Image (spheres, rainbow, N blue to C red):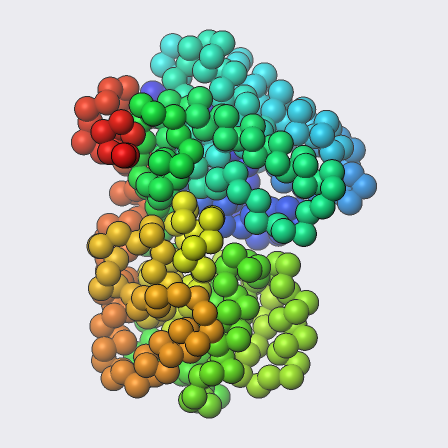
Length: 413
């Protein structure tokens, strides 16, 4: 099977350098792991075409982004296509470049597979499918929902237009891989084939000894870790506010990441002794810190429109660390997760604080068992090897009767 991938894939080097302000670390890691594993599947010939995220001119000095080839590892390379780095023209030239580069590579056994269906990759995929009859599929890691409520005027109108185009692209795509079944019900066309695949984890990143006994730092404190984007959608401010209601003085909150709430959090930590802000760190450093933490926190609001149709990418990383996890009960958590984490009914500070106080009273052996159970489950059942094998079989089979996927007509009322 020949797969032409359209997305925003970058190398590990580019992710760690953080040279592009618009780069999504979580999305980049997702694509990199998935592509490497897909490239290892038997009978797969994979070609990767990518757009590189960068702020438009004049925020970025380059008016023109040249074609660039980058090694992704394991014998896999990506062609990062050229484009004009000017607003509006940027999106148009990126989409055209993806279409033009992909068109040259189409063969009889080709499948065009995209990461998300926003304007650039989505329009290219739909056009290739309609014009050349090539099999088309997309992985919907992100849905067309605007989480930046600060947009005004033309910027807001353009984002609305991009979202409308993305919604149209989703309806026109016949094969979808989603992180949450709710995304299918809300966005896809009746009759589309779909596979639920929440993401994955790389077991090799979590080898090594785990801390034993009570997880406290040399300062004698129990550290709660929040790692992720600092915005309202992530729930980080609810976590910060909850610390005012935590009764044990030895429990502190460590925050890693960046985002719209960064300055607000930095001002807060100057006046409070139980919340610390550490900025952004390399992925390997964050994983090491998560292994040593006492508790990991995912406080996403349950009713948030994005949370309802996605799966939190940080969860698998949290679970694989062996550290107990406290999370809100998002609808993406199917029954198999029920005994692997602590579940709060909501993201309100008083609810989070009540759970932290409750967990603080549990015996250490119970916390250790919870963390070990989650770790064993995710490394066994949710590794990238296991998860991408599902995608491979989904792309390989063109029928509707396979056992790894479903159709909307059969399952969505």
